[in-house]
Length: 591
Image (cartoon, rainbow, N blue to C red; front, side, top):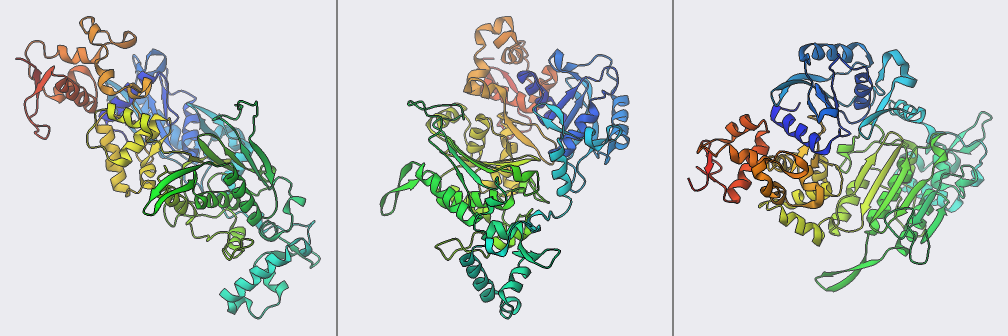
């Protein structure tokens, strides 16, 4: 749960932006508990959790609601969480103060995946299940509800018999290599059994109702000659475009530099997709101990892991089979998208951490760890949860930024940046913040936030920090007044403060760009100048602490300290003690 100071800081940012965030919903509640609260509770529970704030009016600049009965709203909200949603929502609900006014704040946790979806009981599962979309709530689609129910157990679609196929639809050479490998590695199980029995034990094939062995979907995808004969959309599309958007064209009017559909079994699709990407990649020069080398823009092994991951973990349910794995290469990034979101107990926060894995397609995943890539002695995957960590390690070794993950209930999207976020322009922007002592991971986090990306504790962990180090680094950015938290306690998300994001100006410039208007007390866009407001507190010669300034202005303590530090730096105030001194106070310069 947020403390009062963090809540005030969050409300200040809401006022700057003028709207809610995806993980924060603000409602007035002047006439009692709004009916739409039920939808929001469902949406937060089915997503990543979030904060619900009652008692502020968005249309009035997130100002306090006159006559708001915080105690009654708190009790009504607790009853709603307990009695009007299935399963009940276990939110932490408190009454806090914002600039002297009482509001109700609920920290709504994400529901355990085995209990989703959470729905408004009176509306039923089909029409009462919601998810966040932008800063609002939308109904779950039937496919999304299906995916949530699939997450409660182990899907078996990859173990289904393909009734139209026969054993002759499997590639004999690939089958021979597979059996040779498993007999060598597991002689007790496979050495003494005939080929037909071995294929049944591996679930490459199963017996149909008439006792005839037929390939399973997993067997056909891993070892088939042409799986698309039976499932036309179980393929990979590769599109290369000249710009940063799908609708852009190059100087010659071309919309697509390359556009192909790749078919065949998974080992062949991985190799052909990788070849297509290599053919469309530029190279960059790097200097190592022996001289200058030309290396591809994206590390080959990172791409291989990403493609295998998409094909191995995609949704193979009847509805999911209508969608291909999509690979899109833009001028600034590579996007790989597959149907089906995260499966099992792995959360978005845990993606990329060693040993964290959960297989939607257990039969297929097991087969691919013994299926040999054509023309090599390597297998398609290790199936030990090392795919994404290996990909991240390869990107880090190449000096590139970590991937961005965007899982939804219906799809999983992976984005690989083409170049580092710490380019020359971004480095200059960071220098303009005048923030000494920022670590590399903090600088990357700020750069990602500036580009509009969401940053969490896991983002910094993927950069190599331990969990507690990542928490400390992010809290330091909050304390410096550079970022703010928009999520609940468990899944906090961090965003750049609006005065830094707008125009990409330094906070120092933003703080004092309204100096000519200080006499009138007005800052940018007619807003009261915070610097002028704080300076006026010292006009009569007072010496004040940061706590006293916070009480007088209604600002959060972290923000006040930020303004005071900048006023000291500008020579307008002087501090009476060192920053570590608990008795540190401030007075007008020259007095």
